[in-house]
Image 1 (tube, each protein chain N blue to C red):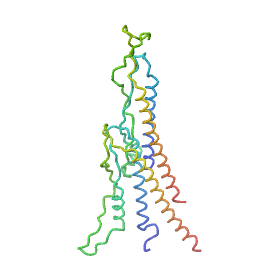
Image 2: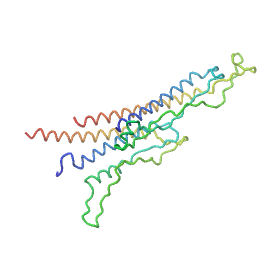
Image 3: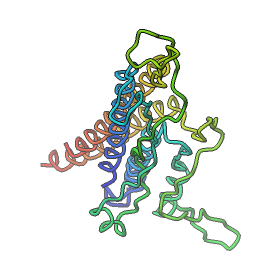
Image 4: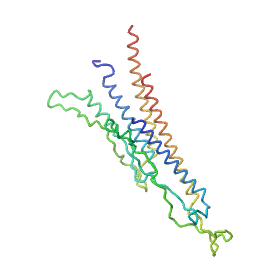
Length: 134
Length: 146
């Protein structure tokens, strides 16, 4: 491990993951709040794409040491909100599927706590390294 | 902060659905009302929802610093009166009956109102679920440092 403990790629990725999960949570909340708003369309983050873009731009990008190599170009930093395709549109032109949103809201919370626990575990390791070295 | 805006969105959903329940209960309560201050029987009320941007004064100041791709909340755009015709019921003994014995009753179908009431309750519950998920997230993020 050549880098400082909390500057490594895993930590960066997890940080970005939490960030995106919180953003996604507010979008899901918006979908649920607007379940009866005529004309409202379901929105979501392009989560995986954002995460890949964020991690590619910070350290884990592929090195191009030869002109024939191709690297991963970092995507833009701002998370892009997109409308979800392929949902059934109701008579009032609203396409919120409440079952999908309820599943998303709990999955997202669960994913968040999973990554939060991973980060907490890393910090515990660091703490143990600091304290047990005496 | 993004997590709080998520909470506000869910709260706006709760408020909107509660207002919907209020309107529905008013309709149910007045299903047989034949006299109103405006004259004539009670007219069925309904409300329209519209999306509401969640950028308050504080957030517009911070807007440049934070990428605010937060979603939209919901609010009641207005309460309108249902223009459908009143129900004519034959009830010659009623004090508001016309010479032919018909009474104009509110254009309210209790069955329809009950269906709307259940729908509003379920939507309200969905929003409370969103609130608890957001709370869980906030809780977990506070535990990172422990």
